[in-house]
Image (cartoon, rainbow, N blue to C red; front, side, top):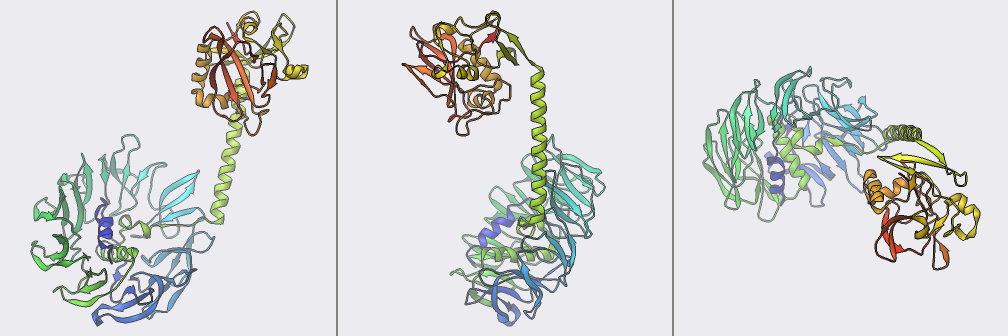
Length: 583
């Protein structure tokens, strides 16, 4: 058990206190690993006598007369055994939870999760269930898939809503004393509501734990304190960590040291220990002195000397400890070995012992033991719901895109070039009005791609720079480098503008755009050094701005840089496309 310290950290660094419930863990026989590496059950009071032979790949503490185990072998399944080691509920589950209040959440291969009773019969099944916590006082916290996301609900054993919550509201996972915590979505502060959803303590805390024994731990200003049900401070926020122990005691951390205070905030045991666990209604608590674990009484006096590499809290008569070789054993309250350190257990089994010990004090400590709040595997009915929701969203998105495009079309129109009678579409983007297609005016210094008139009809003509700067129709002009930049910035920048300006078809190898603005840029290619090239792959457009005597700035869209619009300076003798901008 060389990971006891890790388990200790996992349970002590959490704000949220546990809360009461009716199911108690039974430590009359407990699981440990046998010599073959599989789990068996031993009787501590009988010096470790084997009660159930080694045969399980995983094994939990008994609750409600049953223990959750996983059958051995590569394809082992979860089931429940009685104290004779016989399966009371067959091992048929891929996911399973300990029993609490006579019921447990389980899941079979590719089936919706279900709630079963101690006879293995289904009590409740929820098609959209994603995660579920154990029941406490007839209420379970569950997470269900709804509206495309996981939503928290509090339900009873019939699946009915047991607590009123607001949609989209962040809530704590536990309803204790008829109260649950909630977070204000704007201020991010926490408060408390009753089962009717009525605010009883206004949102004012940075963190808020469930109530237990009429008290709740809260954090404010980076420090921890405790309040009563009226929201009044019993212990002012002053501690670096505060966790309710039991019997009116809180384990408190000051700086790097741990001690105990009472519910009046009075120091009972001075903060002096590097690590500690809890009394949990017992007379002794484990602490670290030097680099070894020891046990102290409620006056802070050492009763079992520091000697263990790891130690857990007592369960009435016995406590698990770790020997120097990493093996685990059990001691009595005098520090004598009831079972010598001979066994090994996994980290999860250490947590299971901690969880079970805590359960006997508080009930179901779901916040402390996330593994017991089962996250279920994906299954057919849920996949169908997710698929249906996804398809619905896709349809709505396509509808919005169509409506958006239709709206954009209302801002589009056309004009006729009086020089040759050709008609061109235009589109308004921001404060600019652009031609929505390339210019196709036959001027000296222009060419059709490959000398083919059909390409002029499709892509417009290609122009050298000297021609391009004066070729636009009356009332229109060739844009400057700055005007191109204004267009890019309006769309969101050069790294995404290309995709949104390109036409939705006509580009090679998946290089099509989304044409969000109706600009409909096409890959018209270019003419350079006596050769045509890149039609279908590149589209390039001149600006009026020179970089030097021989070169001028331009913009390029490419099939392989699918999102970008690229800026460059090229020789004025090359032939590129022209897009005109309204004066």
